Length: 318
Ligand code: NAD
Ligand code: AKB
Image (cartoon, rainbow, N blue to C red; front, top):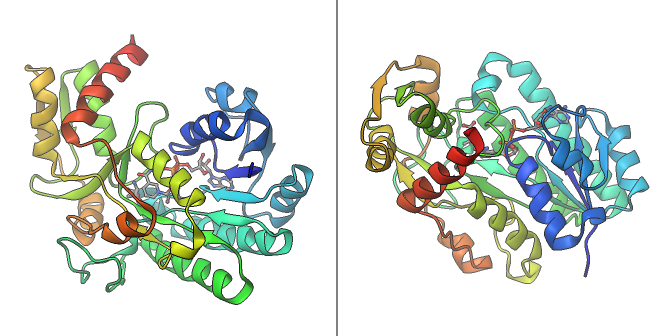
């Protein structure tokens, strides 16, 4: 059945690619992109299909877009990420918690399904660090993480109490070349490719030996569509599934890039706030529930991603 989808935060790192990907699958007019404003540089997203101004802290703007376009699925991406969230915890609470509450209320009133991503940030320092289980201790120590774990629970609540079809994944750090990341702890793994190509030198804000889960954007886009399309009878864990594609430390991604750019150099200038956040997150996730319940199966590892990233980014920067 054709879906009519509203994407919030559609001009961000994920949304700018997901909008175009979903428009190919569901049709241009069936995917309504939305954002805080008509951001410069986002013309492709704004002009290739419907676009609405939606501030998710304003429930009436969400409801208006949903009714106007007869939306039946909301992909809710508008959020404040981990690093910005530590600088502006009040804003992170407002956008991430009140924004999600507003989305769920509008979804309940208008019979919409909701997909919204959680994050590896929903775990904390006393979560098992290696092969982190699907169901485990979640006591995050960042405002972003607090909103993510609360968001998972709120989505479960709206499913159990009101029957809203809520679904989500815990994304790791996402790596892509279309839109720069919006202020997270894993952003270094994107910036390193830009600096390798532009300056052949990168100063890393994350300490050697710090492992975090990561994923290339094409796998993330597949995860979203495949989970939305999954048979609901098979879903035991709705909010939210661990998903991962690789786990690496700064020296691993540096070594992989150096295979393509032999004179690339990296040094370290560790940012204590980012390092503290990174240290509180898992080294590697167990994503077997996603594999079993809806066939999660990522295609890119560090080597494949690096080859593709450098090729595509080189074209973009030239
Ligand atoms: P992003 O920061 O690139 O994009 C978020 C967008 O939301 C931005 O365009 C911003 O302008 C918009 N926004 C902020 N406040 C808003 C408001 N009040 N109303 C409407 N829009 C608003 O983030 P992203 O990387 O695209 O992340 C999307 C979702 O995926 C978030 O929930 C994030 O927590 C989650 N996630 C992302 C990653 C990642 O590595 N990118 C990893 C894990 C989870
Ligand atoms: C961040 O670093 O904040 C995000 C995330 C992993 O949620 N990329």
